Length: 278
Image (cartoon, rainbow, N blue to C red; front, top):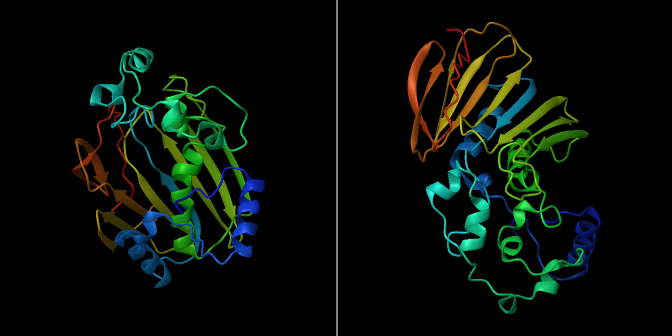
């Protein structure tokens, strides 16, 4: 099964108990565990090259009306993704969905949620609606924290605080388009996660250790490398996960050297980021 297993804890426990009582083997999967660069990061951490981790930071961003509209239904375009004039209502009314209620088992699909009239956009774009998804938290944060577990051999946190809101795409969605979560783990480190759907500047995972050594690592596509640098302070390890599929250039400082990188289209935010002092 693909994550998330459930959005309701009681339903998750009920499904778990049913699986245990059957002869079926049930596995929940996330694809990043199968990619080369997360495994390379795990191996670097296990090798001891990063010592006592005190903070893992992730920020995964895009600049688009994420999860609104489906390509093989009403269609989608770069204009619809960016929606600079906020025309989503016109597109939802003028572009009739191909999906009809008789094509679905709508009542069964609701799965005990409060009844509502059939809506093809709810059915196809369910990640936007609270009754059926937690949005960023169960779609993206679940991937992020799974990587944290892979890298640190942790299984669950001690505490979680999260907040967010709809600050960009007021298109009828119910789940946040911008959010952050702060998580503490039993081994004694802090994990922070952030996402915004209103600016695609940079997605990365960063590590800070509690030792005097400092190391900068970068994973690009399927390659991962590291190099030692002098740091301004003790806690200054950073891992940049740069998307290998690129469409729009932006300027980034690595140490004291500028370079061009690529990312999806953005409402460009000028940001000088000297991650290390060489």
